[in-house]
Image (cartoon, rainbow, N blue to C red; front, top):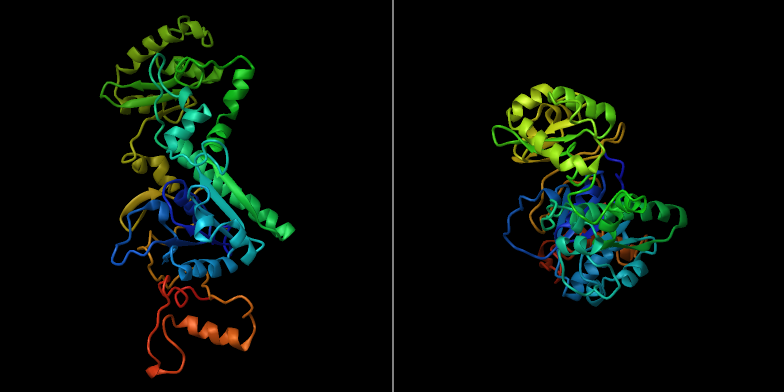
Amino acid sequence: MGPLAGIRIIELAGIGPGPFCGMMLSDMGAEVIRVERAAPGRPAPKDVLVRNRRSIAVDLKNPKGVETVLRLVEGADGLFEGFRPGVTERLGLGPDECLARNPKLVYGRMTGWGQDGPMAQAAGHDINYIGLSGALHAIGRAGERPVPPLNLVGDFGGGGMLLAFGMVCALLEAQRSGEGQVVDAAMVDGAASLMAMFFSFAAQGGFTDQRGTNLLDGGAHFYDTYETADGQYVCIGSIEPQFYALLVEKAGLDADTFAPQMDAGQWPALKAKLAEVFRTKTRDEWCSIMEGTDVCFAPVLSIFEAPQHPHNAARGTFVDVDGITQPAPAPRFSRTQAEIRGPAPAPGARLRRGPRGLRLRRRGDRGTHRGRRRERQLDRPGRRRGGRGSGHRREEGETGLAGELRR
């Protein structure tokens, strides 16, 4: 059981950073109930980001479906959504409605531009948010255009991870204050936060806006990737003097030629010389010389190669779940171990297993005879009490979730 065991989160299904936030929380033991659109017959997706979930299908445009979610909110610790600002308010599931049902609820909001500001209602993707933050401008080769770093900086590092961190912070605070609050996680803010060290460098005169010429952007010959004789690549990060000296030794470089390590004016020429040296051997040959030493060296592996590397294999960095290779939960804990409890469910799947179940109650029903009777009805979704001849009824807007999510 992970460190967040006992925490229940409602996820209004979205794409990208939202599911990543849900994966981070559920990997840590939180029970994450994913509210999705009804999709009869749609199989479970091969989506690593949606592992460890329980899924229900609800029509959020139907008032009864909205009421279903609000009743889930009453028994939850948090909820997060990734719609444009104002969408959940129009659905009747905004912060005001949800906090009215559960004043201790943490309400997470994941957007690109944030909940306010001139761009708040504009469409966008990861590349746009990191473009506005200053991060994208800094990534790329000297004299060339900026290079998108996949969608790692905006969607995930500056998005889903930021939201997960914000949710946990607010959950901790709610335990002390007894009050919930809204977490406004914007990818443009998160990407800007990831650039904090470079703002420090700039203030100290150690960073310019000429990409590909700085210490950590590939400008330095001792912090870059190099092609090997077999068309593969290796990477080095020999910043500290003792590590740089070992690089010079292991690569068989001329010590006098490579002595001016921090002279940025000589970096291009030294990089050209080092590139020639790395092209004389294959990647595996360089691994046999440098891997595991203090050169600060590693082979550049593809996602298909990385799981097979002995270090990753020894640590269990990657695992197979239902035939899908994927990263294992991280970080690791000495006592409350994170785990993958199951693959992505089909939308609206009635999962019978989980950390704890859920029984829906109408407000004011707790502990009353009427409430207990209503709970028994919900425990058998779609069926009235009274026995075999009572008929079958399923409320519009929900998919009989209550009997499957029982506390």
